[in-house]
Length: 490
Ligand code: GLU
Image 1 (tube, rainbow, N blue to C red):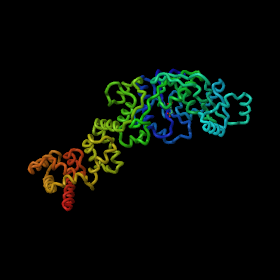
Image 2: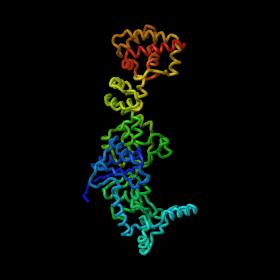
Image 3: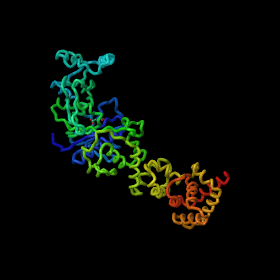
Image 4: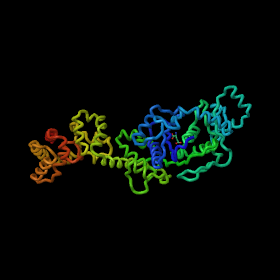
């Protein structure tokens, strides 16, 4: 085998659904580690469990990773020196090597039927014993095996786990981890349909693909003793294992799950999170650059990444922090870029349809840039620029209509605005402030009711900018409508 490089890592998802943020974080750490050390990052699809296969998920996994900026060097669509990178295309390799383990005495054929295993499990359960295979086929005589094979009995191949002693390995983050071999089972390596199990395929591929470091979720710790035994059985050097901390729900009480909110990368994308914000947030779920920086670009993360700084304790997924961070990233975008990214959200909401709508939206974006935390907030935040105001904030109405003169004031403002030659934020501001002064009232006493009349809301971007974008005609019309409506009501 050619020597491929000092650091080779992989992300090895099973295509059982959309890419979860936990998977994305695993991929990210692998990617950062590879880039940091000038190594390679591989994408390998572990699709040998056909019962859990979800057709679109490979597509989703690749799209989501690319959207986040996590690009692999070798993978299913790219090829590479140790492909194919999809396990279902490698079944022959696993089959051959499983049989090799039988030959060398590290594994054995098990002819037990599913019915027998079922009965065994039930019996064990009834007796309060740990369930698991009772190793009945571990010591079949060569004659018995020959006979079964001659009869064409289906079989699986199981690993011959040592009956005594311990299996010990080093976890890069957690130190030594020990398993009593009596607690381990003779796990299946090759199923009766000739497909490998996760354990077999995973170990073979990590070896053949020359993976140097396995960075994966900590739920795989209990699988690792089996992997270590497999490496030993094959006579191969195991990679370095580093099990990443679990991602916890916002309350820190359990694993993050759908109950707590979005969990798939795609969902965050659809809600209008920016990839650079999400990837930044994910990087800090269990790792820190060692200083107080919180906003880091992918390049800065690569620079700062150090596997030693990955924690062991679970990392809480704080949706509010993610939102805050996304807002930070939104504010840092050039307005034109923000416009480009927010536009699809406006179009999907049916608010922006024509070239004129687009031009208008381009002017609105800077007004809202400070106010939104996700792109998904744009349609609501910008709605009144594109649709007539049908309802008015109840509390706002109560507050402002209390003043018996307010409608007269608004009517006067309306007339002065109508007389303006140029309708821009400065002339609007002068007009409104001038009127407030003449009336002997604070400008706020006019600003807030005007905002309510024009937008239906009690808060939003600066009123004068907003009015300039709305345009004279719309402002006059909406003021008229408001005055009309509430004059009759009172
Ligand atoms: N296919 C496994 C998964 O879906 C890979 C685990 C590992 O990285 O070894 O998580």
